[in-house]
Image 1 (tube, rainbow, N blue to C red):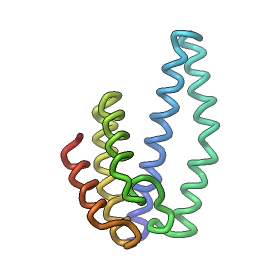
Image 2 (cartoon, rainbow, N blue to C red; image 1 turned 90 degrees about the vertical axis):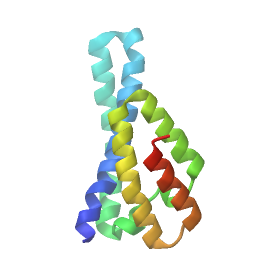
Image 3 (cartoon, rainbow, N blue to C red; image 1 turned 60 degrees about the vertical axis):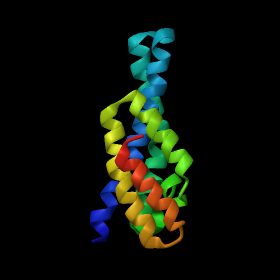
Image 4 (cartoon, rainbow, N blue to C red; image 1 turned 135 degrees about the horizontal axis):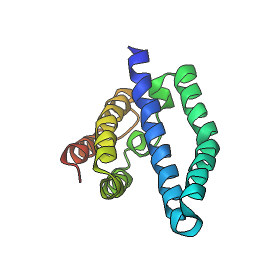
Length: 131
């Protein structure tokens, strides 16, 4: 069961980081051109590699529940709403993945018992509604 939960945790981190890298490199495009924007994407991706590796290491060393961090783990409804809103503006498919993986993160956070149960339920409803 633990291994089944590892994939969503790593995937969620990867999606957020890839989206950030893409957004940064895309915003550079008007200034540096297409080729340099692709190079910028590669550089940003390489800069994120340690964070992705740390996330994966934490999942394997601590287990999915203990490795879960971020706004859902903290029960931060406002930040989840802001992230979902920004992702929906950027790419509906990515926002859909965020909602699906976020629902799994809510279940993990609820299982840990460290976050406010009411806040987690409001986050679950937010993720279901899409905005």
